[in-house]
Length: 185
Image 1 (cartoon, rainbow, N blue to C red):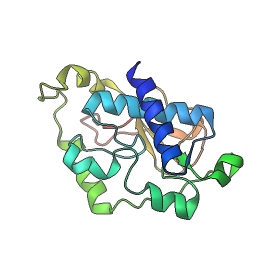
Image 2 (cartoon, rainbow, N blue to C red):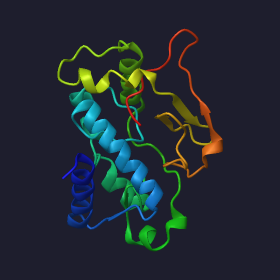
Image 3 (tube, helix red, strand yellow):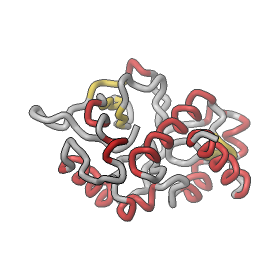
């Protein structure tokens, strides 16, 4: 079984065990699974592909999928922040999927961004160094509608947060002198 297949199996089992469903949009579901697979390979844990991860498990424990905000999000909005876990209502009518507010405290987000900005372009950790060597060459894209960031060669076909199309993404640069090292896909 591949890593991706194991993640899909884990997500589907977790959804069923907790009374949820998985994202009814096949393309979005696959994009989210690809992001989880990338983050699992990159860090050794599946941080949410829709959030900035610091790359340090103890700092990212709240956003390891399924994140600690999932239950409250699904209860209130019918879906989790990235849309991977949904209620029956959303499963039956995917047109109701929409951007929802971030519950992760701003100071935690800021700390993750700071960790990303100060990381060297080459990873010093021997455990994941080989896997991470090529991540600094990825382009970072920002959704101009909701601000979602992703690191990949091309922008996603659809924003996992607000569902904006690829043409609404613009290249994102943290500074004039340095390309960002972003920790999610």
